[in-house]
Length: 199
Image (cartoon, rainbow, N blue to C red; front, side):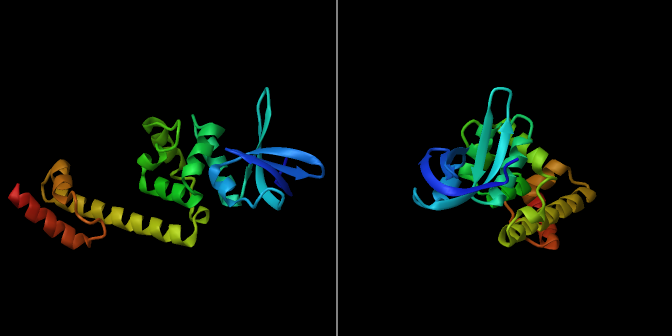
C-alpha cells in the first residue's frame, strides 16, 4: 500500500521516526541503523515502508534504504520471527552482514540481538539460506560469500579423500581441525595424513 514516505522528519526516539507528509505525521517503527542514517529533525527524508496489518492495529515500518526493507521482509517471513525480532537483528547487523551470516552459517552473530535464541537463529539460517541471492549482497559481500563457498568446498573435498582412504569421518575432521580453510585441497590431504599418522 505504501512504497515510501518523503517529508519532514519531526521526531525520533528509539526504534521510531515520525515523518510529516502533507500535514500528517506518520509514525514509522524502524531500526537503530536507520535512525543513525537520518538527517537532523526538521530536514526532509525518505523512508521505504512496509505496512504490517494485524487484527487490532496497522503498523508502519520505515527503512533508510531498500536493502534493509528487503531484509526485514525476509526475516518476518521466517517462522517464529516477528517484526520486533527482525528490527533487533537489523539494528545489530546490516543487510550485507546478515547475508554473510546466513551464507556462512554464523548463528552466534544472530543471537546477539535481543530475543533471538540459538534455536531461532538456526531456523533463520535454515529458512533464508536459499532465499538470499547475490542480488541481495553488495559486490564486496558477494565476493566474501563466494570465497566462503570455495573454502567450504576445499574442506569437504579433503574430508572425502581421507574417508576414501579408509579413515572415519570423525578422524578426518579431527585431523583437519584448525587448518586454514583456504588451503589447497592437495595440501589439506597431505596435512591430514601427517596428522593421522601422529594420532
